[in-house]
Length: 344
Image (cartoon, rainbow, N blue to C red; front, side, top):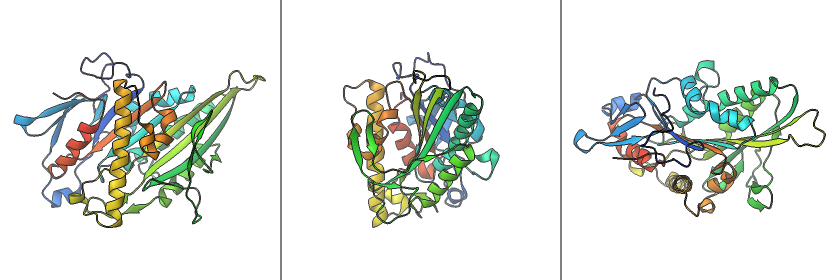
């Protein structure tokens, strides 16, 4: 594992966004399917916070805020890239964290991990543990925490805390709140365990399917949101009131039809997944480069997350990639599409 690079690194292209947008790469270990298919040769190598991709005579290098090799632990990843954004969230700032990458690259493992194994829990449960530890350590304040779980499947919105057949939600522009999801269930929680229970139930309700790349492939984007309101107990006027939102987003995997074997409905799913991921990348790139226009309205994913992207919000993108030669094309596509890098 490599520690985050210095913010004065001259190779970074995010000089104006250094404290608000970060990108990290996590390389997962080869899996048995790759071994049996002869794809175990490493297609990329890591030096510090730089990833080298391709044959030596055509090798390209990409620089990130942090790079995690195959041996990096869940705890090491969390401490390196999400501890500070979570502290910012508890100070009243909005935070958005994405896990991005190819189907079967380890995104869900990074974001959620194994909830039954304390050592293997991912970013989301570790964040919730820290948040509720913070609330307990400040008895002088009153805290209110609500959670919601939203699925975006084929550009349709579904409340993962409801199981009725007519569960399709819509968006509306609110004058003071921005874009809101109408009728989305928001449940008040008092402990990390309660929040994790909601998250676990949402994961079970999510649309998944089998592809050639993954036995249980996420076919939708999952947005798990925590809304925090806090105020000093002796504040009768509300001048110390702080409101913030934390979005933890497990993105559906980017796909290449030739590798996933998708057809019919799965082919349509893959097309919508890739389109929304492209829209997200366009928005992040626009924010990084200081573009006059950020195309939030191009997808429902970016419209929903607009209040936690850009400005004084903190955005973290973690790209999970396979080290296998068999997946080299998609791994290159993944690292090239990420905004916080500079190739040589």
